[in-house]
Amino acid sequence: MEIVFETADLRVGFVPARKERRSDRIVIAFRSLLASLKNSGLIFPTSGESQVTIQRSGADALHFLPANNRRYQYPEIHEALAIAKAYSAPYRQITTYGMSMGGFAALQSSAYLNAGVTVTYSPQISVDERKHDFILPRWLDRMRGVAFCWDDLGNISRTAQHIVVYDPFEVDRRHVEVLRSVATVTEVKVPFSGHHCWRALAGAGIGGAALTQLLQGNPDIAWLRKTIRAGRREDAVYLEKMREHLEARTARLGK
Image 1 (cartoon, rainbow, N blue to C red):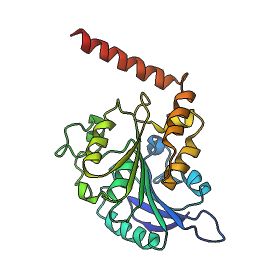
Image 2: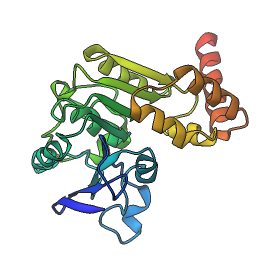
Image 3: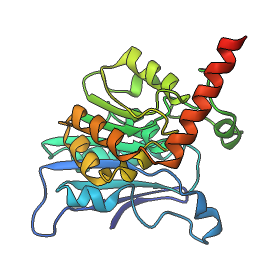
Image 4: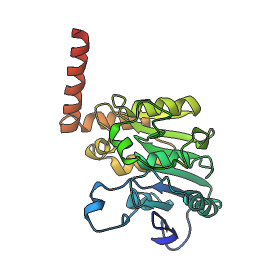
């Protein structure tokens, strides 16, 4: 990875799909912080989000690597984005990508970076409690004292194809509803997968293949849904989430 931007809180690295020549596609990927990073002695993640899969898909990539879990609320984010925009300008297709916190950034950057496609797994539309009443406490705790400098629905592209993978029974649904109010969304619903819905695709044996399709902007939604259903019948998270949903539904009906 060639580091093209670096501060104490943020790095951006370029990873080509191949050494011989540049691709005509670029993915700008925003990393979600690894939970284990605090105890590893590392300051930054050592690789980008889905770096190997993106490279194997034939796309060049710019990887945004944060040093903490502050939802990219850094004053220098605008400078980093300007560099990303200059890097990505020659490409035929620009895709922004991320999971959870990275999904927030992929959406926030989509208009400025002229993304034709965004691919997000369980993205947050915002974590500012002044704007929305459904922000989870664990996210609010991490944002205490943070000055929001990059959190506006106006930053989301109105022309990009927004592909979102999420569990419709999680609070992530509320974030998707807001996104749907300002942009056209292609939804891949993965019921009872929880916030970490990407694990259901990996458990079904199609994590890499699914992401490759999504990043190219032409996913076979019917195939994705069918394969996920077939591959997760014994998945422990799926069974537990389904049980929790049925118990909650029974309790509501019993009132």
